[in-house]
Structure formats: C-alpha cells, structure tokens
Image 1 (spheres, rainbow over the protein chains, first blue to last red):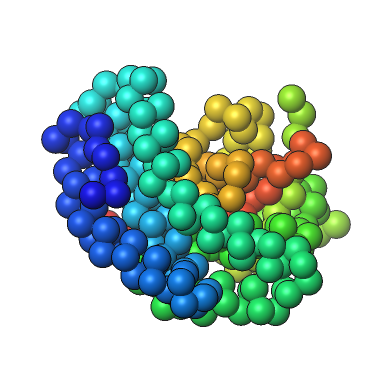
Image 2 (image 1 turned 120 degrees about the horizontal axis):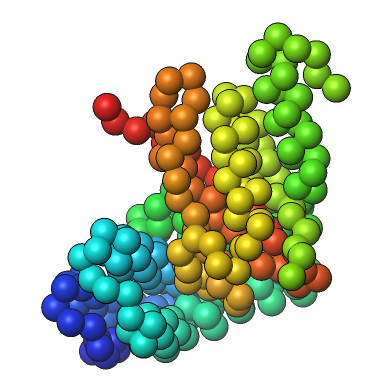
Length: 163
Length: 92
C-alpha cells in the first residue's frame, strides 16, 4: 500500500480508494518512465480529485457534528496527504516548469487534454485548476473592477442607471 | 494582513454569466472571505503550494436557491486569487 491510513473506520473512503490509487500509481510510474506527460498529469489530477473528496467528507462530518474537530487529527490527514501526493506535486511542478520555461502551449495543452481525460476531477476542481493556471499566467481581473461591473448590472436589473 | 483581491478571467467571466442578483450574492461572500481569508473556508489540497481553499454557501436569487463555491489561492505579493466560482441550482 502506498497509503498508510491513520484514520479510524469512519473515513472508509480512504481505504476504499487506496487500492484504486495503488493501481493508478503503478500506471503513473510506468507512464513517467515512458515520459508520457499527459498520463502523468492525469494521475496527479486523479489523486487531487480524490483528496478533494476526502477532505470535503471530513470537513462535512465535522460540521455535521458526526465527528469532533481534533487539530491533531487534521494535522495527520494533511501530513499523510502531503506524502501521498508527492508524486503529484512533482508532476505539477514539472508542468509548471514547462510553463515557466516558455513552453506554454505544450504545458497548457497537455494539462487541458489531461483534464478532459480524467474522470475523477469534478467540475469545480477543473475550474479551480484552470483558473489557477490563468492566475499564474497573469490572466487576472482586479477585484474592484469585478465588483463595479456587478453593481452596474444589479442597478440595471432594478431599472436604475448603470455608471 | 491586508490582501489584494484578483479574479482569474475565467472566474470573472463566470460571474458575468450569472443573473445579477446571484453574482452580487456571490461577491458578497467573496468580500466576507476577504475580511479574513486565512481563516475562511475549508482547506483544499492543491498540487501547487500554497494550498487553496473553498468556501461553500447557499445564495438566493429571484426566489431560486443555488449551491455555490468560491475557490481561492494565496499568491505572492499579498494577493488572493479567486480561481473559480461555481453555482448550481438546488433541487426543491
């Protein structure tokens, strides 16, 4: 097992998916050895999507009062995720270096194709990843501009005059 | 610590697609997050450091309820990037 669970039986999803991730990890290593960037990134996103899911489940259980909030437990989860995700981190660092070295089209295109082929990343995660890539590339809009545009639209909708 | 707020063009475009009242409701939540972004939302592991965060909430517009999420990440130079916003109509 590449994942060493420290959680109790309430977080069954961790164990249920660990075998799945083991298989994916084997595929990841093989793809990395073959230099298949797309597969490697897809694996990284797969793990990321799973971790998002686990984390959401955990936070929800705490919010619902089904389990107490224990800082040490949260720290353990985070530490395990970091270890578990180290291959993914390397992958995404590689993708980012791709971008930083000017291979923007290659890097972004590989990422986009990986996103399309990765069933485990939900819509929100895709938005997050793609939005973050935009942010890194400097494709941003100032928050005050966004606020002003929304206010103008609300005013228009209410029959007022937009600035 | 005071942060400067920026949106990814994707997130800004998404807000522009939403009905005005919904977009306004989501922006109000963004402002709430910005009051103390370090302590808002649930942590979300993101393949680049530093980690991102998610704040989810229900917004109402024209009598309809939407389940919304704001995703954001801390950037250098004391900026907070809103990577993405999502809104899904809630089932009755």
